[in-house]
Length: 118
Image 1: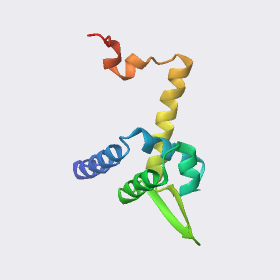
Image 2: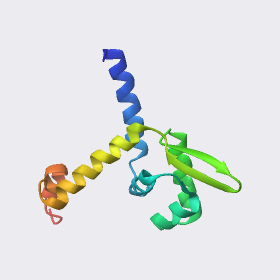
Image 3: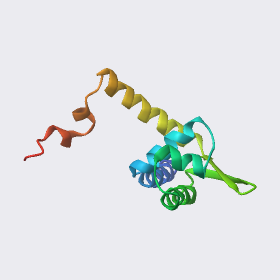
């Protein structure tokens, strides 16, 4: 990959990572990992109100993280690209490493080493 392609890639990756920088958005993309879902199912899965869920969905669609399609009165959302799927795989791998003890939270998030009383 040449320098120009690297710059373009890093700019695109930065945009995606910033857009995913909210716990509820991460929950949504994790839910969509198994396939497309309606707004109602996504809302039930993450436990937010319909307006807040729709706001997150629109934001991620506008940032090319999600794709959507209409069927009658329902809107179905899905992951827009393999890059998003690969990011999820990486996150899930790290989570599994934490659960099995292969990785410690302090290894990922150095600030968790500090006491909350400091």
